[in-house]
Length: 568
Image (cartoon, rainbow, N blue to C red; front, side):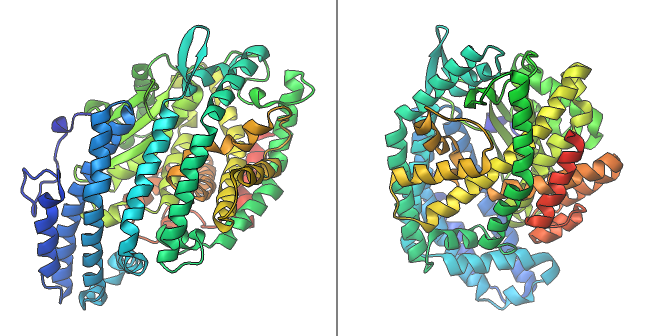
């Protein structure tokens, strides 16, 4: 990505056009000026917020650019140093300065004078930030960022040798779809062995993260990190008890569907027991789905899918390849996973992923494109605080896009393969809901049992996998199962960020259910809700999309009934 080639459609009005955020000294005068400006009236506050938003957009964009460069090549020492310099030297001072502005605004008459229908979410967020902030947590958060980057570097360096080639774990995973069971087992074992080779180092990184997070929560006056994380993530509309209700509902309504699908798979494969290397292969013996050969083919195919779905979305997607806002193919040294990052000042999205030609890569690009559409549809909102939706609804944007494009997958598949791909996706949603419950319940256990050992942690994970994982037999691979959670980067990098996927999957299924009746109306409501950005509270965004906000028994039961209907 070359930032110089990207358009600046929203010119600066407060900052100099040539300002670059290379050091704290570059932006400090603007934080100081905002800290001394009058805040007595609603008009003064609105002008103040516009200028603060412009300043923070420039800061956030610089951080995103450095993060993108670092994750695209974790072996690039200069990119690593630039990112670490930002999070260790620049960001802490920005956080302290921003906190002073939060406090000044919340304590001003203007906070109550602003129109509530527009500024409710913003004012609530600022007040929450004031209540949570502790200066002594700034260096702890710097260290947390450093350790998170350490996890990515370790994971990004993992490769296996297979058939004379060095493969990333993502590239090797292609062979888990091979009809030859011996091939699948060999590749699965090599991946598992490679992960276990770094088991102790990753456990050490996580223990340090856990200790840091406990201290951060205690400094802020919370009994445990879970209570702190719920406030920090601004989960004003649901509680830990609601998450436990989600876990219980998944166990009651979705796990039986998973077991039914797994039993069917076991019978079709003709095996006595379903093993971990039997989960990705087509059980009928049909060759794996291979929708594209390289990234260019993937981009062209997805572009055509969006052209068939909706002219507006098609036009938005075309911006990404035009401006070099895609890095899609897996390679050695690239960080794992996939994400959409926002260049906050240009209000443009960037998509990062590790494609190797599998069907799940197609879904990943569709998913991240949903995030990109969210960024682009909300870009006319002038305040950066209100362009960003809660994560629970941001994931509705991405998960819905996977489902809404179902009718057009023939672009990259024959009719028979497209039908097979759609079914695999729906079966995968059953598995995903169970995996989400596992990961979320695991994080609840971790942070409410902070003084555990790595072995106790592995046992807690194993117990949850038996609760939500169905009939898969792990005999002989108990160690690989116990430390399987190491592959879920959210647990390391984004603590408690996972239930959002469950809430969003329920929402996405609701949008898809509407689209099966009236595709145009469902798409209209979807785009309208995305255009609101973060201007409404979470339940209000669900309402705008024509959805009910419910992550407990009613929501999960409705979703499982829909999945049962279409799968059987």
